[in-house]
Amino acid sequence: MTKKVLLMGVILTLFLSMQAYSFAAADDQTAIELDGTKIKAAAYIDEGNIYLPLRAVSEALGYKVRWSGKDNPISVSKTGENIMIDLKNYTITANDHTYYMSGDYLDNAANKDTTVENTIYMRANFFSENLALKTQWDKSNEKVKLEKTTENKITIKTIKEASENEEIKMTLQYPQINGLPDQAVQENINSVFKKAADTTRNEGLQNADEMKKDMASGYSGSPNKCESYFDYKLKYNQNGLLSLIFLDYQYTGGAHGMTLQSSYTFDLKTGKAYNLQDLFNSDADYVLYISNIVGNRITEGVKEGTLYELTPFQAIKDDQDFYLSGNAVVVYFQQYEYFPYAAGIQEFPIDFSTLQDMLKPDFGFLK
Image 1 (cartoon, rainbow, N blue to C red):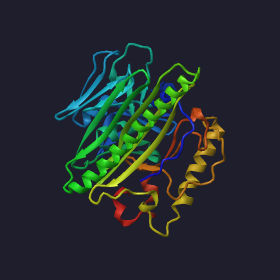
Image 2: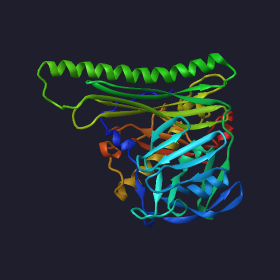
Image 3: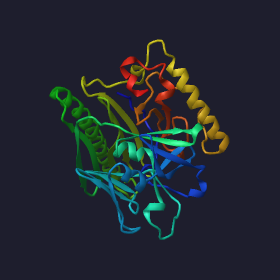
């Protein structure tokens, strides 16, 4: 289990907001192959992020895509699955879970009346998180390789709680899994998720109580009520592993609130929660290896003007916060840990393929 690091402050909308990029800013058009078969559409690579054409890729996977206009949600569906992409309100609804987008789509015709076929490209993480699709950028051959994957045989129900009074607005969403053969393991994992949400609720109630006391004693600060927001995003659900992140936002008055990201990676057979070091051989210097990659990317970002360091980066921790994505181990840093408030929570994916000599045999499938 990763440990939470205290976050000094972040605007919730930094996580909740969605950005639309122009194709003019994209670096290149790249061919797409799905399980070795070429798709008649191009991917776009923008600042290292892979964007895939929503309709072309979804339909190649057997989904139906429907869209009746700019102000209406896009439906991506097939038997037993329904995903709604709301570009107006910046949300994705996957079955019973609605969450906010964060830089998830690319639009080459912003402010124009166009169709989804040639405008809406979703970032690769959308497909891995919702359509069980593994994405690999083969830069040397100028193509993106897509591979259908098999998800764990579990179901995930989203528990929702929402309330509001004069003192606080509370919005909580957390997952509960079902379908594991070992009920004790299932109950333990579910209890961890529920406890995380309970912690957010209790913190919010405490914040509201303290604000109420301050107001009663003559405090004339922010007129706004407190707010607590808790949500999750599923990142990896394959090979007996479940990896996901939680976002815990608290607003207690003033200009902005505070957001904290945490993550869990569970073995669904044993219920073990993995730390980063659990993935690697005992003689593997994964700290140095990952630190060099992260350090180089930070240096590049600083030179390009996309990053600014508050504190010079030296190295990741042995138990650095991390999660698994479709094709990478992703390490991340909390707001203000190294970068200023506006930088948000910075994430650095390390492709599984580059870690293959260091991973334990038990995690050989990640290669």
